[in-house]
Image (cartoon, rainbow, N blue to C red; front, top):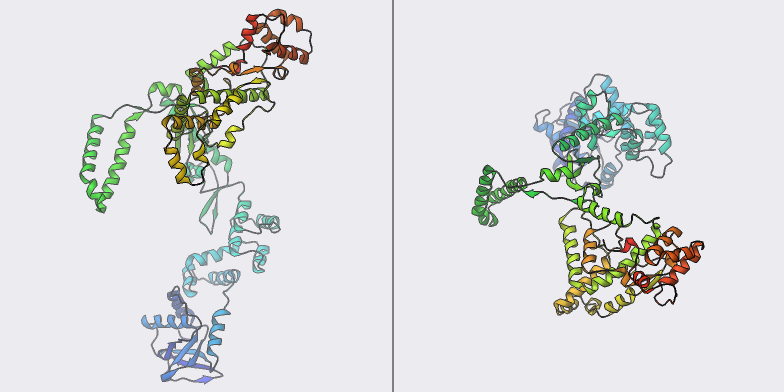
Length: 629
């Protein structure tokens, strides 16, 4: 502080006066009413090192005092130095004396002060650093944190072209920091040119992404599972984000290979534990296994030691739970700990058997922290003995069929079959209710359990599923279904007042409620043939129980047969009518044969050469995919 001297006098020269510190007071009329003490200690260090580089602005006050109109933080910093005994209370402070309009001067002092541009800080602090001052010394002198000084010094990594652009305000400080991820000035300038005209502007996130587009950040699950030490030991390079403490792994291929090796090792460990197969991927696919049957661990019991421990925990819990709920925080925490220990022991009491593992597998993935997560107990269709038997039976029944039906035709047939199933389920409301209740619970209690229902469907969506090309024959099911729906007690669901509607529902009989639940099941039911990709065994089982025979409600006509192949029509005619019919029409064009076959199936037809046995067979016939297996 050699630049100033201690004096008791107050002298004025061109408005500049020397005032003893102990005569300076806070100005109650200062325009800045909201103050913060943050950084005052650092400012005191700066004044001690550099002196008071900017005069205080003061006005005369009562009792020979001077009110500080501009520079209150500097006055507070000087007070700290007095308290530290670095200067005396009579220390002379250079001030500018104003005589009027002190509020305006105070406002100007606070509003028009402009912080130094970061680029100017960089150049000034770089010169000081080159002159031998350490980062901490620069920070102390200028009331800044060492980290801020380090960040400003690292702006030296900016290309001169970009530093000029930064000064000109073409991008902000965050963008400047993003550019410094790389020392490659050509790379910086190329990214600047490519992004400066983009609609989102020069945003730091986009700059960082462009510079590191082929690199993987340390926040990635891959970097967490591999680890920096293993990556660098394998020859991988790392780039550092100097401003956000983020690392970038430059060799994405190497990192992916190392992560894959760890995933493969864990998958092999699970297979050595008895699982038939393990699929692994970095990201979990929760749709995987959706169409597979899922097994669940069975109860295997606890060891004697674990059982004793569980009994002790249960006893202790019962002993303290009332007091814990009564407000004892320590006992409440103990109850929480006991719950965790009991859960761990309960988990040990259930496990997959060796037989289950031998026919099933699971899906291995990584959580966001790079930890292994695994979903086990899934049975692939080809490994599922129950599904294999169903498919085998269906295959045997279709073995002689010469051609597949088209996908579009199968979709229309499934819509016709759906109407039949809806009618039969409404005729058997108890089993319909049970089927829906089972699948609702199954969906809640299992993860991605298969279901024949669209559990999110509404009434309008459910009613609208019909064949795109029409009924392709005589369909009695729809009229019968509409007749049954018209008799349902649906009035309570058309009331505007919800409480009134609920009470009306409560007043229904149990049989009426079951019938409404069955109706809801028919609305949510999804179309299915016995060879559909989304085939559900429970629905087929129920269809068999209630004898849902499509042939009872649908008779095909020419519109159906013309959508099949001629070979298919000949096969059907040979099995259902007789070989003479096939010989009679074998030279017909496809459309003509479809018309003849449609006429033959028409129950009102008077075709003379079709006998009663053939008529019976036709009345009982429907395509193989529509029958119940």
